Image (tube, rainbow, N blue to C red; front, side, top):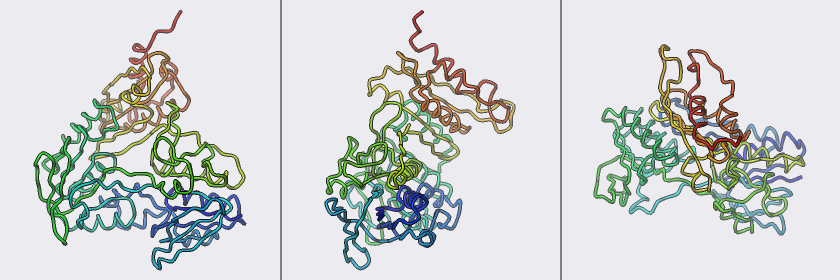
Length: 454
């Protein structure tokens, strides 16, 4: 069997490794336009921050290691056309510019996503970066180490991770967010608290501007020099990082007649199959099923990509595996503040037709007499009519993420609030109060849901 894989970061590399284990004699070729494969893109902000000096620590497996297992890696090789009728892919060598056809029996598309470049005047000036690949991280870190001020456009996950990175590298930083709050994927009341808590440790090291639109960059052949916003603010900077989101790479799939979903990403079933026989897709270029709502969602995360790549490989190799979907679970950190969420926010639940009720509590993450005790704020949301848990958000300097992980398991099981309140969570003074904040929130939330009929 000839297995061709397009893309080689998380999903593609996982699919290649799993396929080889399942089919020792298959011919496996992986093509990527990147210069590296199988690396942790999520670790790039922490490389820039200086947590480790050698970017190679981000590499999970090298091309040479794949070659030892007879998986053939083709770097700087871009797929430009899929021809399903003849089961071929047109590949362009980015160094020689030569193009050639490769045949496949099974094709796995794992071509990821690309940064969205906003329409800002002079956005192509030198020293205006995006952060997606290893080379991006290397270039940004080199500039950081030779700068005094950096600008971040966008206050989502990558933007605030980079805020921490630049501050810890002793730079002054300006972060600009178009929405009224940073981290706008959280409910507004939680997002307001996020901004307040991050600003509480500012110490004149950074400035966060919300409800601002960048309209123009100024500079010369040596790079960007200043930033101007729609309200007339203008300031000097040494470099800019665009963190304005990503979009799924779908053009080659769409051109081949592969169906796209409602999110604009590639539509696949639970087996990661597209609408065309023998063509599978996985990773940041595909949409997923949201387990709580049953709607489609596009959640480009490395954890999802790895699981999807595994499922695609199993089914390509003759097995039967299903990827049932995602909960939207996510976590990040900025200047000692952890932010985590899973399931539906109250706002999203309302838009999907639920009748949500929520409770927000602020509690110690451990017993109060412990030396490293911290507060966490936890918002728990359920459906009023059924009492079914819908989602949760947690922020704080304490262990917010482990509460969200517990909640994620409950969402996967389809638990209601009352069932969850009976959960036997662990307790010891260094780890939790006697009644965990999750159970405090659940207890209060039970009083808000529709009473059961006698």
